[in-house]
Image (cartoon, rainbow, N blue to C red; front, side, top):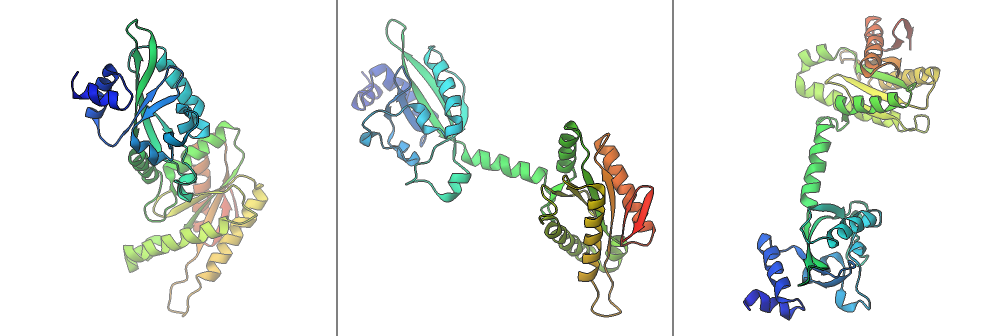
Amino acid sequence: MDRWGTVGMKIGLSEVEGHVLHGLLEETSGDIVIRLDRHGFIVHASANIAELGSDLTAALLPPHITDLAARDHAAFLGEHVTRGLKGCTQIGWIEFPVAICADHGTVREAHFPRWYALTLKPMCDSAGTPDGAMCLMRSVQQLRSLEGELHARAVTDPLTGLANRTAFCASLRRHLARGGGQMVAVFAVDSMRALLLRYGQRTADEVQWGFAKFLETMAQTPTTPGHELAQLDGERFAVLLPDMTARAAREWAEDVIDTFAGLAAPASAKARHLTASAGLARVECTVDWTLREAELGLVLARAGGGRQVAVAGHRRAA
């Protein structure tokens, strides 16, 4: 018997299981090694399982492997382990959030749980009968966080932090799949090109950021439940108003335009007076059609001198 068989015997494993443990440990250190019986109950585990808040020495009854998973993933983990316990070949990795013990978790982890990946290699006795399994649990929290960050960057405008055009179009497609009919408003600060040429990109960015925060505030009211706000490009913003009639959406957009004009009033006659305009459309036909109609309304509003709300073919001063 070599040293790994001896090590296995010392922690309650057979010589063969000790060699399996060696193979698992060769892959990585710091992961959690678990020995399951044929029913999926944890017989032994490496000491670092305590990171999950599990103390096997204090348990009257051995916990089941599914006890480690968050409640809504326990069945998924159980099915995976059950399939593995029935055979004698190693199965692939699965990922699941762990159930953090109250004494070990944090308030943040209650909303953003830690994710682990698990793989197992079934054990068989000399007759080839399944006899439990050796498992390896590996933290994938860093990878999950990175994936979440990359996704957030892919659907978020870096200047304003709002959803970008890609994310907004995806949302419109979902609404169209359910029948559509919602109202969309497309806003823009008037004369942004002139402002950019006169004051530079930094000032233009500050105006865009300020207008984005203003729109967020105006959209987060009891009259606009379920709204979605996005930046379509460097100049235009879109607001989806799912629970508004066309008339209510127009009145709300007009209020936004008037309020912004009042807040952006110049301190002196020489300063530039910032105003905004908006175009309205109904979510129908296709995403491109919807946005084209709303942006055409914006063009009409600006053509009329700005500080207006318009619908393609139906212009009205605010």
